Image 1 (cartoon, rainbow, N blue to C red):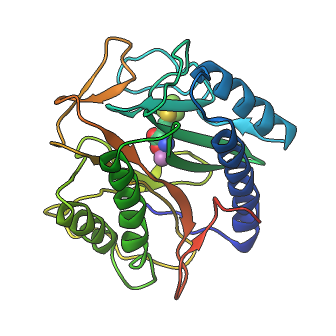
Image 2: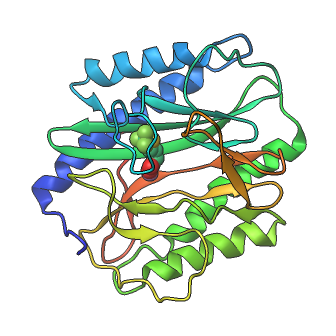
Length: 255
Ligand code: MF3
Ligand code: CO
């Protein structure tokens, strides 16, 4: 069942989304060669708490037998697709880093991710980041009452593949609200089933995960970190959005 949010719930989710955006902005400013991913996590957690939120990810219980998620953000570098765990890794010039942040505020979650360059990056890496962002915007052109989830999925896939990249199959976007993961699933690729019809008041985390090479991935021994099988780069772009009768509203934006 897809939960339709009331005006009151949407107002709270806007605030959760605003905190998420503040964290991403702050981390973007900090990212440069020499910084450790654990330092990014510390600042993220401090910033979330300072604004009255709670990190959604910290302590998250996996359904796949992994230990509870140990950090407030995910930091996925280069060939890491998602769920990279902050630690002692030091970023170096030319890396790309995907940062995923979830904020729980007043009973509701917001979830957003960006891939940032570290210092000066290759043209290939920059193109991958740009296409991933662009595919999100192509997708949400269909996040409008009356279309279907599958219209969002198809538009994302079309954009990504037209640039010679591939979309991850093993992880998908999702509804979001009182729970970080609610119905419906929002794949970034066409599926056999026509997805549910969209209605105003639905809140979705739309999150293309895009690989430079093939879409095949594997999970590292820490049971969290997802990496590309071919070792090529991967990028991520996610916002929590509200479906309306015309243009979707991006909730994980600065108020
Ligand atoms: N944004 C991701 C998701 O939608 C991140 C989850 S990390 C976790 O699943 F630790 F919370 F699982
Ligand atoms: Co998400």
